[in-house]
Amino acid sequence: MKLMKKLAIAGAIVLGAMSLNAAQAKVYKFATNIPEIGDTGHLLQDFSKKLDERTDGRVKIKIFWNSSLGGADQYLQQIKSGVIDIGFINSSILENLIPEMGALNLPYVFLSTDYYQKCLEDPYIFQTLKDATAKNGFMLAGYVNNYTRSIYANKELKSFEDLKGLKIRTNPSDSYIKMLKAFGAVATPTDFSEVFSALQQGLIDAAEGGAQALYELNFAEAAKYAILTEHTRLTDFIVNSEKFAKRVGEEDYKIFLEELQELGRISMKVIDEKAERSLELAVSEKGCVIHTVDKTKFIEAVQPIYEEAKQDPNKRPLLEKIFEIQGRTL
Image (cartoon, rainbow, N blue to C red):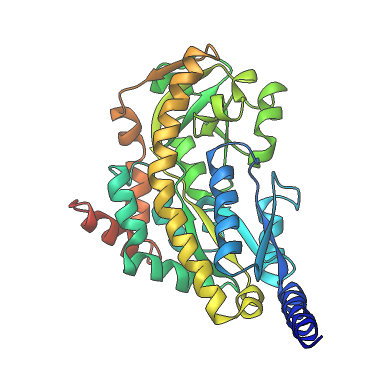
């Protein structure tokens, strides 16, 4: 009888602990404007699982895909107010609030993936971006590599001149809009979730972005052509509300940041390798026509954008550091 009583008490303690853990666990909202399919989507799902495991279930994340909580501009406002906990927001959108981000968005500013990673992980650069973000009422937590951006279209493109007059989708960023104008195109800001339908309906002639989307997201159904301008490396950032950091507590927020740091490092290798493979498959399996191009005219066309950035007190310090890391002279 005594043994049975002890077992009953032990069972009650275990059940009580489980109930307590369940009560302490909370599901946090993570808003994105990307689809669940694709390499970035898979990486975010892996991150969510690892965070759940490392916090023993205290921090569970529910990811909302493809702008289901609104476009990035909309859910960013809800992150600032604490209604949404975490968001996936690229540097071009953040540039509208944080001018310093514009240094990352300049065309042809990074010479390679290795240099790109070194710049993002540089303590001065990342801390400067974190401080600038904090002034706007939310927190910069991590990043995800997004490969190089090129131009895919519903007509064949082979040269710099072929872009003249085309309506090309881009992000609502001053840097990106100026870049496409320098290329002779008509910049057409459009949320990423609307790109596929805009191409299908002929609302735009082309889109600038990762050309691997032709295969990974089946964009080849709306656009069969691409020209590898490789003009920028748009950075996807993970941001969170101040309320989220307080709710999870210091220990779990530290784990959150550590897992995001690991996510960033993994993405540098995974995204580039899979993107290159996806471009090959877009040609072999989807029938896409993808051209490489001499970038000389593209680089020459954007030099006035650099001259303007050098005069900007928000961009110049970061730009100088980016150039220094790459052994370049501004």
